[in-house]
Image (cartoon, rainbow, N blue to C red):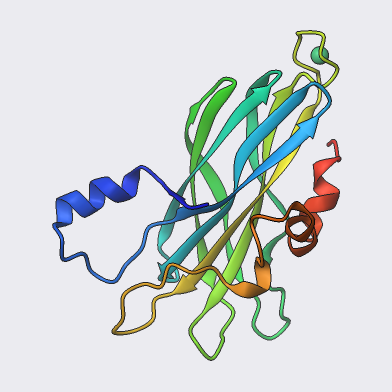
Length: 200
Ligand SMILES: [Ca+2]
């Protein structure tokens, strides 16, 4: 499913119908993760298809407790923070800065970060940044938030604009094959699978 972030419609309105070839980050994929008595649905895949190296990205990640309880704890980088880690052409960038948090069972965190180098491809630079959304949840279902936070993996994928064309709102196939099949989803997201059950 695709659900654009709130900032995009506002920008398009202010710019009129002839929007230039640029794109804001949008939510490409949501994930649902069960932790005992608590079930969390959250934005796990963010895409920007017209990114310029060095520009500050502003990303909003939302979550909702379909069951149980949730409370924001932190948003941190997740190793290997930037990928791919090609030795000659590694993706590099800077740590995230949290701008605002709407806390609660249904909430969102807005943060900024930037890429200082993208992996060169024959079709422009591409890169990924990985984060953990840390939420306090009630896994044992006693109605009280548990002491340790649960980790929820977030991927942000960017691609440089294709010159002279409108931004193509399509994610790179290598990091995502299907958002519909949970089995494929876990397999293609690789390290996210092991992250689901982890505790700090
Ligand atoms: Ca509890």
